[in-house]
Amino acid sequence: MTPLMPTRLDHIVIAARTLEQGAAYIHEKMGITIPDGGVHDMMGTFNKVMSLGHGVYLEVIAIHPEMRAPSRPRWFGLDDPHVRNSLDCGPKLLTWAVNTDSLDSLLSGSDLPLGTVVEARRDHLKWKVALTEDGGMPGAGFIPLCIEWLVDFHPSEQMSQPDCQFKSFRLYHPRRQWLEEALKSIGAGSLVDIHEIEDSVSPYMELVVDGPHGEIVISSITQR
Image (tube, rainbow, N blue to C red; front, side):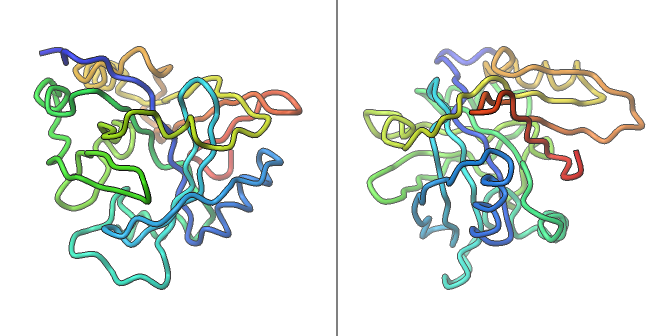
């Protein structure tokens, strides 16, 4: 069943061991100082955010070192030992997010279980989000986090936008048809570029932006 409400690309998520490391990574890649965002009390995380134009923003997120651990696993798999170990090698592009006007409709149409709906907030922002019980990312991050904003504006409208514009988000996966069908079921099939790769190659994703010095590519494979 196809969701009745439109699905839109919302933001791209980069995680880091510390927020300072995440900010340094963005500065190295883009030559840009990403502004502070805020604190997620329910998850014990905080972030830095910036608009990439076109209603899309970039989020750098990390566990807040001075906050008590939440009662449930943190989002984006930040409590998963595999994810935490990968962040020891440096900040990493983890996943992406979409938004809809009806999260319940989107979830009912999904081919995959995306979690249960939870309300979240940060400062003056409030939203609903689908979270898995273990905090893991559906499809190892290739299936997006799904949210419904409960404010009358998109957060990117109130974010600083440095000299950087969103160009595309690319997914490279050996099961292209499976991924296309899963994304189509939540109305997100046309939001990203999907490329099939050989079974011997690990799946990866790329954020492509236009910056002051031309095209910039940030990959989920740290050595790329």
